[in-house]
Each structure stands twice: as structure tokens, then as C-alpha cells.
Image (cartoon, rainbow, N blue to C red):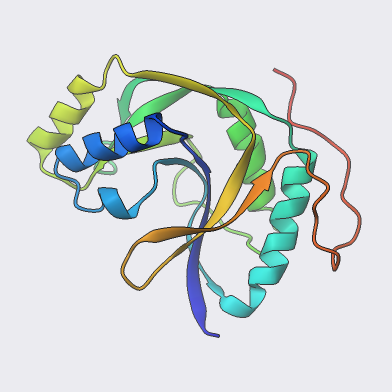
Length: 192
């Protein structure tokens, strides 16, 4: 089957997802239309395609332990000069995102992954574009706000064309763990 590039993220729902994607494209980010608007839980990671079923079982177990939580975006931030990124901030739900991403990347699971930088949940709105366009994104979205109940996350695969496509959704608290798995551990997201 060969290797595939996967990612795990929380989708930003409509109408916010399309709105932010269009804004990202408008700032000149050529990758905007190939990347659904999201909060990353597992960054792009190369895996052997044969491991995908085990990854899905693992993600189903993580989701089964999770509970819906409020997500709220407000204002902008940047990783510059360390990384050429402008983002919309996650101002509510960040602790739950951190809890989730630790379990998705857990060393005992099928996708243990060390991060290059400390985890910081965010929604990218400009990446690797001209500085003036990055400044514009930062300013124009400084008063941006959106909120919704986060009810799960999804597994995505990047195609040869560079476009990210959803493979499967994982709703929180779901008992739909594929049959080849063992038991689902009890637990829930941290108290808010």
C-alpha cells in the first residue's frame, strides 16, 4: 500500500470554515483551497498505509473517551518570526484540544509523534506568504469571532495533488469502535 500522509483535526464548521478559507485565499495563500479550515490535533504525519485500520481503532477509542465542549475563536496571533504563520486564536476549548492531541499522539498508540514546537491550538489563516499579506491577515481578522459546540474530530489524508480529504469522522462519546479493538477505557475531557 505504501506510505500516506495523514492528519487529525477538528473541523471549523460552516459558515465559519468556508468564510475563513476564502479569507485565507484572499490573502494570497495558494494552499487555502486544499486545506479544510481546522484546529490540528495531529500535524501532517507519514505512515504506512497498512497501519490505517489500527489508527482508526485508536482514534475511535480516543473519541469514545471525549465529550463535546464549547469552541470559541477570537482575534489573531502569529508564530512569526519563528514560523511564517498568522492564525485566529482558540480562546475557549484550548485545554480540551490539548487533552485530545496528547491522546491522539500517545506513545503507546499507532501514531506516536513528537512535535517540533509546543502544542498551541489555532486556526491558520495565512502561511508562508508575503510579509505585507501576513500583516493584512493579522489586522483584518483581529476582531474575528466564531463559536460552536465541538462534537468530535476527523482523520484526513493528503492526496498526491496536495489536497486534504476527510477519511472518517470520530464523534465524541460514541461507542462505534471497530470490532477488532479491545475495550474502550473510561475517562473524559478535563473539567472546565
